[in-house]
Image (cartoon, rainbow, N blue to C red; front, top):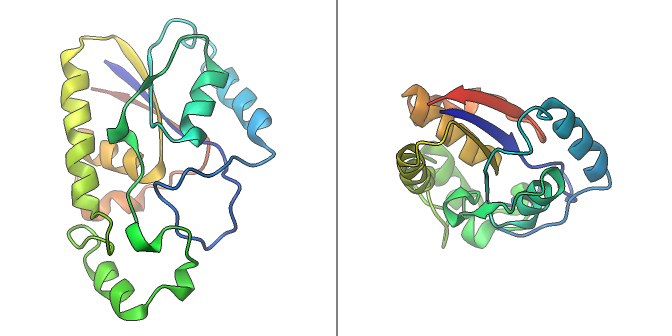
Length: 176
């Protein structure tokens, strides 16, 4: 199976703000970014199933790229940052932030989730996807989810997953 992982386009949010599962708007560059992605995937867009996060920054991109109805899956949502959602990183209580940063793999954000929790739900999605026997799929999702999928497929430690740069509108092609 060929998997095309696409990170959503640039969101309309200030730099330095913590966001994960908050449904935020996309920036004014949305149409331009969609065109660039569309050109790169023009050979496969018309007949390849698209799975996406339910958040509008992913669902909107899926709808823009193809006439095929996207398959929404909540497991493709970004990490839930709980109480930290929409707070500037520098205003998050230092003790709590430092505890999380020392072990973000296992320590959940207050009223949120850990990266391991995200990885478990994403891994379940990939296991189910394998069962479909599809030849090609497009997955439109978020940076943390893409890193988790890469870690799962490449069987690399989660601790190393953030060494991979995952820019807005980036595309990763993988074999599963």
